[in-house]
View 1 (cartoon, rainbow, N blue to C red):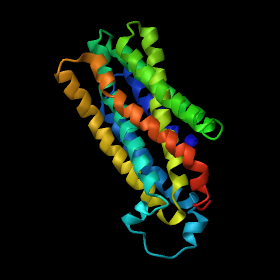
View 2: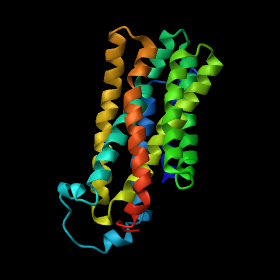
View 3: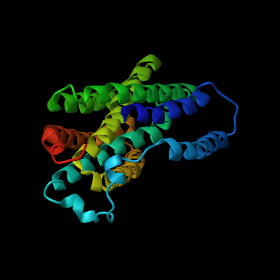
View 4: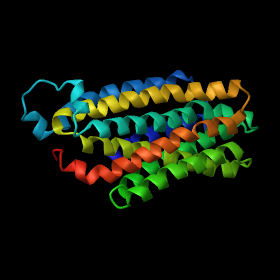
Amino acid sequence: MSLMYCGVPIGAALAATLGFAGANLAWQTVFWVGGVVPLILVPLLMRWLPESAVFAGEKQAAPPLRALFAPATATATLLLWLCYFFTLLVVYMLINWLPLLLVEQGFLPSQAAGVMFALQMGAASGTLMLGALMDKLRPMTMSLLIYSGMLASLLALGTVSSFSGMLLAGFGAGLFATGGQSVLYALAPLFYSTQIRATGVGTAVAVGRLGAMSGPLLAGKMLALGTGTVGVMVASAPGILVAGLAVFILMSRKTRMQACTDA
């Protein structure tokens, strides 16, 4: 699953490359490519992407939403919602505001595009690396790695003045923020049985999208208050701490919860 999600930051990095290289293309071109190519791939996915054998063998009505709050899954559901909300808040705050914040810090637009490229390369690397480490590290170590790395990267983005340092900060932010989110995508299905897995993961993603909308709004509000880049980064810290604690609890419960789910 982590390998699949690498496609998201890689695609974003390709788009950032256009700005970094100063390509003289209409901005609509990126949207045409991003819209048409997936449509071409749909028939191939329908043909070669198999349905879960367990799900295909069960003929029953879709479970109600309240099934997510059954005794076996209620805690995991709420914790996943917290993780998704605050992690995606940071991810989309960076995606939407980082280029402008960098320009306001005195970097050239082409340099800002370069940092965004580094961020997406970090995201692709983090998706692979953190996904591989998820089953190898202890829960405390994993949650500390992801969310302390995220905090350190955000601090660097708000304080580093050199372009090379900002490239490293951008790479780290992508590695821990987007890479950490990819861990959540791989983690969420483990807490639900086959019958409610799609509903459980789908609702977590929906709550995460609320965070994705809140992140840019939070950044805009902080800038309007005159806090600057550092203020924007500091404002996201409490949410990162909450998400880190929730991930620690989830990963601590993972082995026991897996016994209640289907393979």
